[in-house]
Image (cartoon, rainbow, N blue to C red; front, side, top):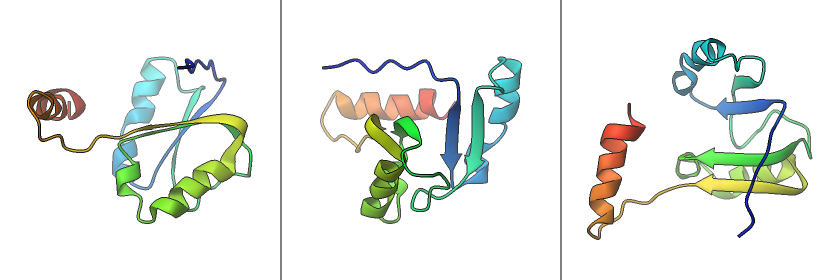
Length: 113
């Protein structure tokens, strides 16, 4: 499998929920990343970017919340440059031991912290 390695000049994060964007801007400033990371409120089904803008698109735990999956994925492809990469990190709730327990541990003690 080919490794995905980027060293972007700019990272744009987008979420429909202002609450999810929260105080991340302050955290980025404290880490000296405020000039590289920009957060915007927006809808996955109407991305506010021109076609072929991004070299890579990463979605973590968000695809499950798309109101219209096909439209959201289509928008991602619209703004992705030819040859670009899309990475989707998504989990379903596992039912088999030990994965079920690892999943619940992760979301209870790691992800929500």
